Length: 488
Image 1 (cartoon, rainbow, N blue to C red):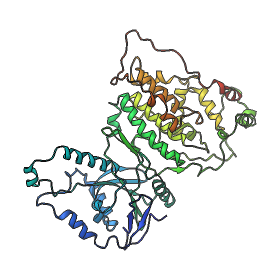
Image 2: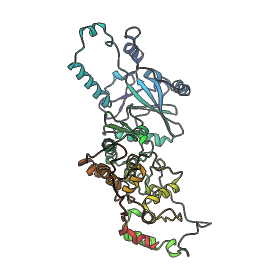
Image 3: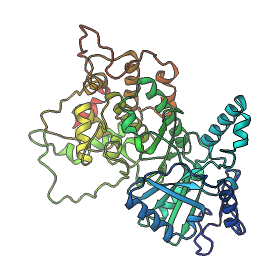
């Protein structure tokens, strides 16, 4: 891959391509960059600054940024580090000013260029007065351009770093997906340069979102996933912090492809869910559990000396957003795992609770799911992947609850509006235990929630009517697959 080169004397020899097709090498590119930087910043009137108002930076963050500038030669000549805006398990993200922005064809800066066009049109419609032009208060000021510098930790696997950069490069140009501008390497340090996208914290948004706001949010997110899935790429870590949404623009960008992978790249062996029903039935009937059923109906535990090999499968993701097939260690995971995570976000918005699922591990996560779906459907889902699901918790019923009742309980309302009921129907299609029945990104965008929206929308709390009675109908989905559960 030509995006990374390690050379102490020429760390920044990579050039951003104007066509967006790749990264090109230009050894003469930075021969006079210091003069260019001085020319672009040194011609301002005295007392004027090209930078926006300084942000308040914590002392520890300032030391961290200074350490990066000291250990990565030349980075301070191209970027001005401003603040730390994100920190995860595998990387740290900084907001920085691109000092050499005007030296490139920045086809990636879609939002910035759109705002520029709007500002130019506004200035054309309302020309400044003659006094303003003479004063020159803003004539020499250069607008600051910001990017996000993602410093990937040296503990990350080189193969995983290369995989993330390759996937970002392949997704360049996809709508609502954060593009890769370029990447630099010095010794064992890798820094990826990404666009900076102003956004609002999800913890602030979900408390005030109306259904119309949820529609704009989900449309942008699912549109990004449609582009990702068309390239047969699994993001594997869909959650609110990885989707930077701007409520003013009603647009967002999908970020952080550190755990992403191509579909089918890590299949060790086909999962039982990829076979036909009759194959699954025969496997279940020939299993040890079926031939040696427990006397009291419940297993006494695990064998003391179990000689069977442990089942390995990719379980990457964030707690509370993992799909059931990930928890059941399915080895044939598809792009539908991302759609389950979208459903969790929609459930968070409708239920006004964040995080909605707050499990400590995968076992707790399955218990949380079983309290919603019931043991009957959970056993069916487990059998689909060749697993056994059992629980003796008396609070978990057999049938579970409907999504309408769950949203009512969670959001503390007596009844749902028509628009909330429509969103709940989309929720049922996204949070389907069977991945083959779960909505894809394209199917979700064609749902009535987007194509024929109901505009009966009120603020949080709904519009309860006097004398309304909760529906007592129970969710009977999954009865056609009860034969597999009956075998167990």
